[in-house]
Image (cartoon, rainbow, N blue to C red; front, side, top):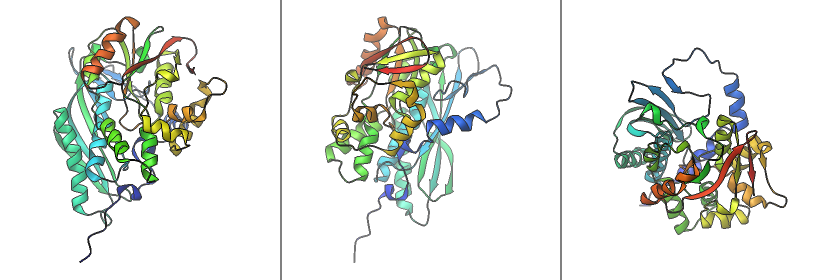
Length: 349
């Protein structure tokens, strides 16, 4: 009797992970035409500053953080896909400085193509990450779809005065990145069958690592803004802070932590289609030095699935911010640039 054919989840999807996000320019056009009606005064964060989650004040000491995130497979292993998707969704709570409270599952599966056992493994992977975060999956919704889709509605709590918005950064703040870049490039190499076993382990290490420093960083008054770097790449999410706070950013490429194997692939021309879509959406706001290598640009726009926290803080707090990352296993965390007065833009050196 022949063994059953191994299921490759990525064969069912046109894109994977946060690389599935609608391109920045298209998303801006969609949102620009959406009606904005009277907003309640207790809605502390909505859509106006491109933050990672909505925040609603419940009382003087508690605000609800609410977010949803889901995507198609970035890896073939069902359990790993579930873990990555859940980590990515919960990250939005940490990016607002919140503590996760509970989650609801979002499940869309091609039932005629995927065995129930595979779908169960996806859900088990997500549940394992929620258990690590100390929260339950308290419900959810499922439908029959053409492509596998999995993610979470993630809910959390934060003190209203400790919310870290894209609009609260200040001129003179330094920028600190918590995880190395390159996950999108690793996913592209995986699809091409070129990713090494070590590269896959590295990809899993970072995409399933919860951004737990966010909760501690919210308690630091000198930390002014937080976001997580996901589908729009480092440049795109940094520009969201610049637009929200009406500031310019300066970044030194050589100070950005990179995944070694991803950087090597980038030099060989491996990249995702989303990287170029990102550049088309916001490249006009980015100033690159003459002769800047294109592989470096691809890393700046590389879509990060479950990427790292990007922190804007007073220079006096930089060492403590990096220490908060280091204590929680984020050794590559590094200061990569600063914010200055000026029109929203990014200058790379």
